[in-house]
Length: 141
Image 1: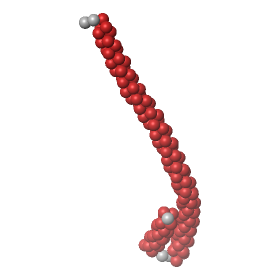
Image 2: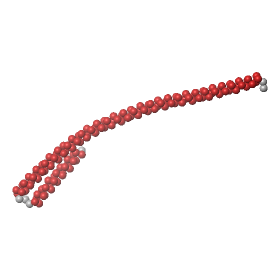
Image 3: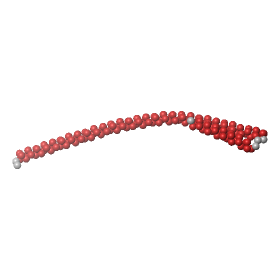
Image 4: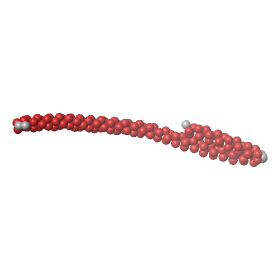
């Protein structure tokens, strides 16, 4: 082989190597550019998702706050009604006690037997229990 042929052969090999390096550079650069673009797009999507999630959390917190405010009013109203029912029950108990004392005095004055007093006591207790049940039913509303 002559030196001239060798030089031509080396030039062909060098040109092929340059072409190969160029192609690898283009493919690698395209892949790198595509990867970078994909990462940036994913970052944008994650930021949007984060904002959406934060918005949903804020909306749910506001709905929970409104529900708690509504319940607070209802609980306060129920507490007021329970206090009123307790006052009514106390007044009913005092009235029943006074009625029993009066009935006892009347019975002693009239000379009624003890069995009649027991019957009256049971009737008064039944009336008190009915009043308590009615009060409990109203407080539950």
